[in-house]
Image 1 (spheres, rainbow over the protein chains, first blue to last red):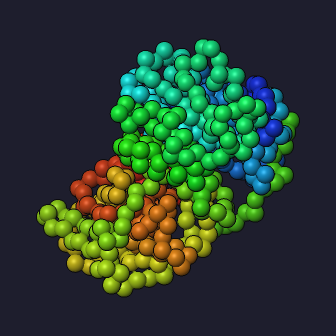
Image 2: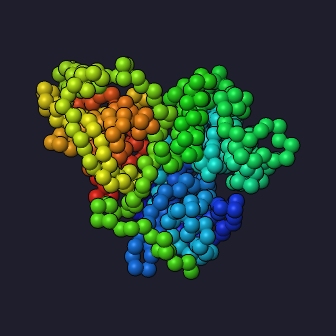
Image 3: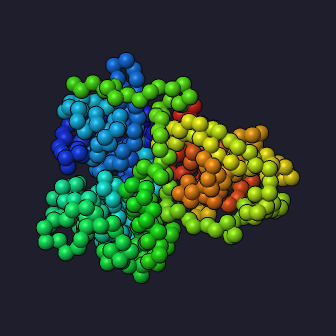
Length: 241
Length: 193
């Protein structure tokens, strides 16, 4: 299996833990997995006993050449696949995986330009992979993350992002509930918030924005209004209008 | 062992393999949504002789329009049945175009590109669409006008389309250079390179 997307691998759930009340980290051991770049995704296929199948795409939180693939899946209440992955899949169970997929919303360690990551909710997952790639490659390129989330309880990988060994400066922005004594009131990200918490246009950063479509639209428009070049802005979206 | 299948979606013969139905209309775009005023908009077809056929917004609107009801299929695995569009058939736009080339590159405002065989966008198979569900096409879905090639995965239906350039060979467009299939037939699951 030499080409990504040409076939299905078998992933066996090796470890899992709750990230938030509705999200779960799932680490699969994937026989033959060729490794993946930061920001790529994978198709996951589930098969019922009668042969019925369902496929969904998930961003990969892990990065590199290891034979493990970590997903961070948020439960969609009316979903078909995410409730199964979050609430039912057991250690030792298998799923099928196709990938790694996508060659655009990707950050490579040889990239030397400054990088601004902006994630909304579970849209932080591919950005986590970029943050991990930045740390593991000892990249000298400045990388910052602005993470917009509803409340402290909704944070994915909170300890990792705030660890002393983190090489990415993370700013959190809360839209509904803040921690006690937080300087800023909860609310949607504004242009002022973005100007304050992101790399300035003068630095010419590559900008990766991932989250619900409405979030990505507003943030991308605001970043361009701040003076960033449209062709420096890469987006990955979920949901619609 | 957990057993999958408890919450399955309705199966439907109109849905290609590996796809599932969605009620919403998800947005997938590789970059920011370009802001294009119809006053500044134009659309062109350029051939190997260097001839450029050009329409501005009013000229496009003056061409015979068709109401189109089609199923659409996104490579990210959602499908949507019976979507309603209005636009101009590419047969109309190609009526006076002379070319011996067999492929086109679609170019969009914002820089997106996608490649298509010419024969797959003629004979009633493709449109420049400017209305969705009775309303002006939303910018996030490609407004003011997008290519609509519903028999291929939706990345071929270039949003914010600004022109088609005839090409000798089937050169790859944006996603085709980033791991996706050159052709993109959902019934053959031509998803990836």
